Length: 343
Image (tube, rainbow, N blue to C red; front, side, top):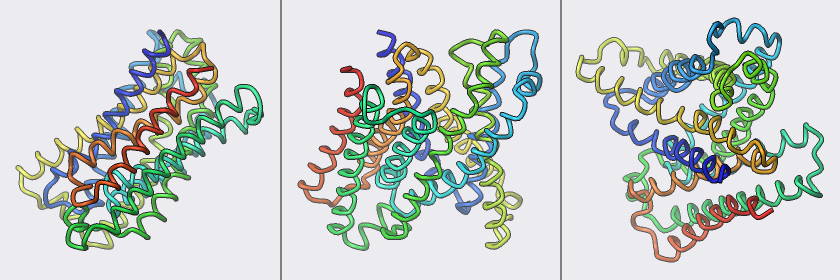
């Protein structure tokens, strides 16, 4: 029963993340770099900070909790800087491929690297016992995501140029695929950062932090590193494209509208990792499910993002056979989530 509860919590967070790009469509008159870094303030600083503060035990400050972890703090932030490249290119992948295909390719790659690399670094044998179950589960997830990616390529062939631009304004298949793969590899550094922050979590638990919230300070450190990477790029783009005026010359109504939807997008995005931390606490008695939780989160993100892709009519105009391929890929993802629970 605890495993089911944990999966439901992770699924709720995943649905939030997959929905986070919907509010961005409501942003008006701002360049990509301006709204991306603005939502990042909320997604990578404000809400992670609030989440981390919830985890601080009575009688401690967040600074005291992190300083007790020593050099591990900088290691986690370093992974966050690398993840920031993934987060940045992740946003670009959806700019060029759309919500469904962009998230599918990026998160599929992220799922594999983010799940298997920590297991390898810990010395797990991926060809026997729990390691083999983990490897098969990840392989099923990647297969499902590959099928969805194939559906995306079929979609690109069947749609006219006008239909592509209507669904995704800046659609560019080859460029989008390369960016999505880079995003997936670098985004895996988020989970590597969470794994590297294990001593910080242990420190928090020893100080009296709740099991449900103990991952939150580590999430904050990773997202801080990611914010630095994204801020450098976005402010450079503001300078290059002369778009700093987005922040200074927008009308009051535009400002309020854009800040509101950026804040909503940031909250929804952060919910995936808040849910991951809480959900993992219910998976503690199942090492396989705990190790597989990252892949589960990524698979659910792909599942829900494609639901949004359908609702946003990104698949409008494609043939029935393409939809069958898409649904098949989604079903394989569901199987990948169920598979580890059978052992």
